[in-house]
Length: 357
Image (cartoon, rainbow, N blue to C red; front, side):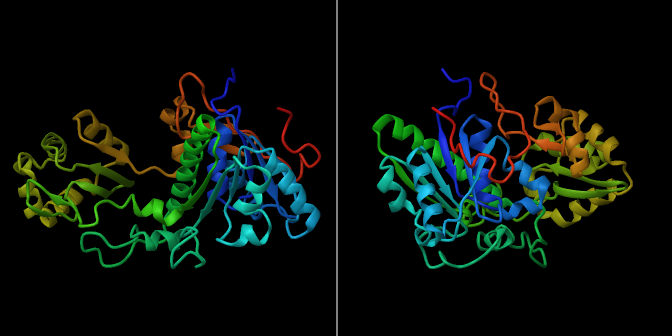
C-alpha cells in the first residue's frame, strides 16, 4: 500500500504560469508523480522564482518543443504512460500542437484529460484572451457591493487562477476514482470563470428572511481601520456576536438591537463602529473582542502570516532555502501531504521521464 494518498497517479502536466500548475501541485503534494513538460525556453513562470516554487514542488521536468515532430512524438509517448494529462492553453492550442484529447486518447484510451482555461472550451467567450482580473470581472466578483461607488481595485489574491486550479484538482480526482472503478477515462473542461461565478452567491441578491428584503452589507461585517492597521469583524445575523462586539466597543445603547434594527440604521452604526475602533491598537482590540466571543481578526500582512504560530502549528507554512513557503492547503491526519521542496531544473528528467512503476 502506498504511503501517499495519490501515490499510484501519474500526471503529465503541459501547464504553464499558475492555474494548471497549481492544480497539479495539489496532486503532487499528495503523492502523485507529476512530469512537467516545459517549452524550449522553460516555463515563463520561472522568472518569478518564489511563485514558481509554489507550483513546481515534487515535480519532474522535461523540455519538449511540441511544434517539432520529435518533441510531439515524445510527448505522446509520455502521455501513453500517464493516468492524467493536464493542459492550460486557450481552447484549440493543444489540438494544434498535436496533444489534444483525441490525440492523447488515441495512444491512451482510458486517460483522464483535463483542460483548464479562462472561459472554458465551449461558449461564446471560449477564445477570448484574459488573465485573472478579467475572469473575476466576468464572474461578478469585482462588482461594487452595497452601493460602493466603484469596482474593487486590482485583487490581492488571484481568485480565478486558484479557484480554477482547485476545481481542476477535484475533478481529476473524481474522474480518476471513476476510472479505477469502470476502466473508462474522462475529458474535463474547467473554466476559471465558471468556478468563480459559482462562488458569488445567489443570483437574486440574497433576501434576508427576518427582514424580508435583499440586504447589501451589514454594519458589523467588514474591515475597519484602527490606529496601527485594520481589523475584520464578522457579525452577520447572530445576536450574540453583535452584542459582544458592541459591549467591547462601548456601544452599549445598541448592543441588544436586532438584525432588522441594525439594517435600518446600518450607515449610522457602521460609522459608530468605525469611530470606536479608530484609536484602538489592532492586536489589543482583537484580543478583547475574541475574548468576549465576537468574530474578530487582525488583517495580516504576508510577513505576519508566514510568521503566525497558528499556521506554523498546522504545517501550512514551512521554511525553505528560498524562504517561507506554503504547504498543501488541506491537512490529512493519517496520510499527510508532502512538505515543499525545491522545484526541478528545466529538463532535469529529460532522459527518464516518469519513474519506473
